[in-house]
Length: 273
Image 1 (tube, helix red, strand yellow):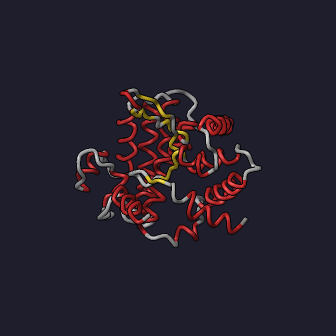
Image 2 (cartoon, rainbow, N blue to C red; image 1 turned 90 degrees about the vertical axis):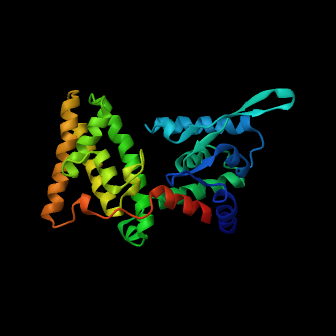
Image 3 (cartoon, one colour; image 1 turned 30 degrees about the vertical axis):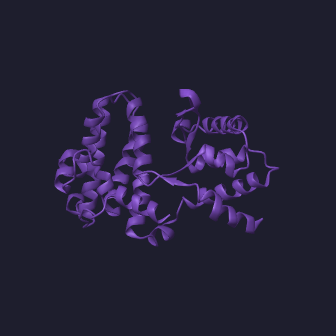
C-alpha cells in the first residue's frame, strides 16, 4: 500500500495538479475521475454531489471548492455539446475521495493521499521558518485571500455596501492615510495590479493581522452599521501600526517591494512542474 501510495502521489495526483495565476492549486474533476478509476461521468458526478453535501453540512461555501468550469465543445456536423467539469480544491478532492467506493484501491489510496496532503497545508511555525521568502509570500498570500473572503462576508452582514471605502479604511489606518491606490502608486505598480501580490512576507503578515482582527471585532458588532464597520477597520489598522511603532518595527510603507510579484513566482513554479 505504501509503495502504491508513493506511486500515486508522484505519477497520478501530483501530475494532474494545476496552479492558477495566484499560485492556488486545483484539480479538474474529469482528470481526477480517471485517476480514481471511474469510467463514466454520470457515476463520478454522483460522488461529487455527495461531496458537495458534505461540504455544505460543514458550513463551508461549496462554490469556493467546487467551481463550475463547464465548456461547450464542437461535435460532428456543426453540433455543440456542453461538457460538465469542476475546478476542485484539495479539500474538495478529499471529500470526493471520502465519498467514493472505498473497496476500490484507487479510492483508498486517494483517501490517504489527500488526508495527508491536506494536513501538510497547515504548517507549524518551525516549518514556516524553513520556507524561502518566496514560499513564505505564497503561503501568506493565500492566507490574505482566504481571510478577505471571510472578512467581506462578515462586513456585508454588518451592512457594508461600499467595499472600496471599507477596504481603504483598513489600509489608511495601517499605512498612515494611504489608500490602496496610493500604495500601488508608491510601489510603481501597473493599473489594476494587486498590491497584496507585491508585498514581502513581513508586509503580508501585518495585513493578515489587520484582516483577522477586524474580522473578530465585526463578529461582535450587534447592529448593522456600515459606518461603524468601516471605522472599526480603520481603527484596527491604526492600532496595528501603533504596535509596530512601539516594538521598533519598520512601518509597512517603508518595507521594500519585492522584485517579483506573486503571480510571477507562481508562473515560474508552474514551469518547473
